[in-house]
Amino acid sequence: MSRPMTPETMQQYRQIYEEELFERVLPFWVQHSPDRDHGGYFNCLDRDGTVYDTRKHIWLQGRQVWLFSRLYNNEEKRPEWLSLAKRGADFLDKHAVRDDHRAYFSLTRTGDPLWMQRKIFSECFCVMAFAEYGRASGNDYFIDKAHTLFNQVWQWKDDLSLVGRPSFSGQPATRSLAIPMILLNLIEVLAGDDWPSWRSRIDHCIENLLLHVDEERELVFEHVSPGGECINTIEGRLLNPGHAIEAGWFMLHWALRLGDESLQQKAVQMTRWSLERGWDYAHGGIFYFLDSEGFSPTELEWNMKLWWPHTEALYACLLNYSVTGSERDLRDFEKVHNYTFSHFPDHKYGEWFGYLDRRGDVSQRFKGGPYKGCFHAPRSLFQCVQLLRRLEAQPRQ
Image 1: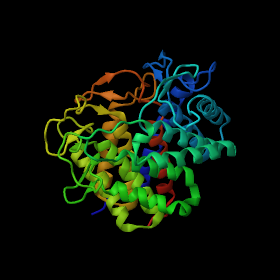
Image 2: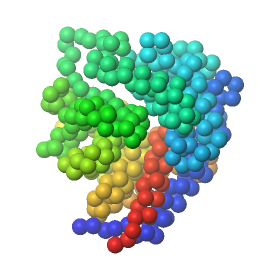
Image 3: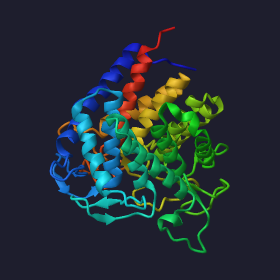
Image 4: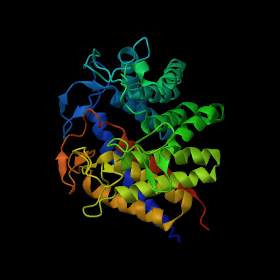
């Protein structure tokens, strides 16, 4: 059964998303985040944009460089956007990455090191930043730097002891969903139209991501054994619906490029299953964490409603609909849209609240923090705008 979105409805949604992105979300970051004295961006911004901590978090610095570079490359050649991207790219280049290619997690305002994780995600977001900014600026130095850093990350991905994470005799061997999905996303940014030359790495990431998908139970696990088996521990039973939904649209992008209809169906189902399992039918919105066997999750924030799972679901459901034309996917998009736009946008100061309690009341008022920056909301809004434009341009049958 299908219920097509009418041209009028597509136009209405596109206008909503364009206005939210270009008039309320981006202006907040353009006005409040640039550090005009020391480079980079302020990440910790209160509801009205006031800086409440001057530390700079590399995940968010890199993501913001990518975002403004992407807008410059794919929307409009605005000098302001390129200048903002340059501010962050130069700061990262000067301060974030050590000679051994490790990247810090956070720095002082002036760029002195504060903290380094024993993970590879700071490096990954530097790759995103350098690749997209290099493309925007035409500066091969940053593109070369992105490729060099990615190649190092690729060597680390299967053995995190190489980045200092200890391994103990009682620890079960596990795989993390985060690694193959983020590498797939990085390859999409790095490769551009030259993706066939990356085919072996693409296939490797897809193969490892699919180990986390239990088609029989219609679940996507955060952690599995090296062979893809379920692990009966707190970590092994963990479901993160927003993460699985994000992985779903990463996978669907590649399935469409590869022309793989079987993979397309699996990617579509990843989003459908995760949204259905993760939806709070009592109060609305997407749970942050769940236990696959119905035990009470040990994460105290499990029933909170965070902005980013909802932004990922907006785009993933709309992308599903663009592929399937299914009434189910359209209903999913409309459901997520209605909850998201009635709870997260701040109509007084712009941008979006990030953290709500289960009932949907604002829990933390800040707009930027150690893990929330200029990324998930504007990325999703922009992707939805681009997709709605393409749907509007398609000939009517």
